[in-house]
Image (tube, rainbow, N blue to C red; front, top):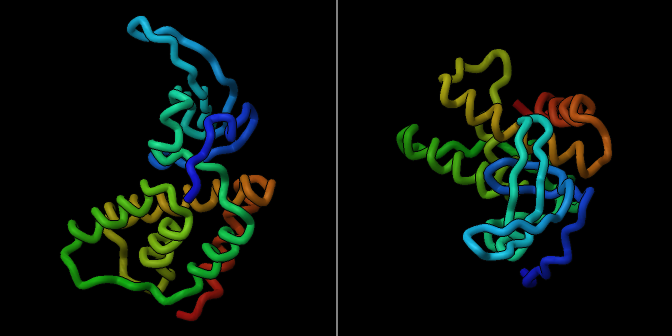
Length: 169
């Protein structure tokens, strides 16, 4: 991993912020906070109607990154085809691990969560918390697939869904 220079992100770039998924840099602004001049990325997460200001010098530290390459997206979709790997640990422990993977911002880890929590219609019911984690992971994955492939979320969701449905039961 190379140290990224703060100039690597520019307005109108899509970026991935670990805790929130795909956002778009609207601008870079200067603000004075507690007597210090800070340069901030203004990132909009349209879907969540949320704006985040991230100091440019902290962006890489907090794990902000550029969108995944098409290669990584392909790998993530391949991951979905795999067989679910569900550990025998207690649900609370597994849920914690899933949450860490989702918030890592790492597309392959997020794809693993989607794969492991995906249920076909004929499989047992998901608990509420399982479904919450599944939907969070699915949404992150879908948004990034959409942003990388330059399509809308609906089309990306269809792609992801087709992969999940096609995988061997």
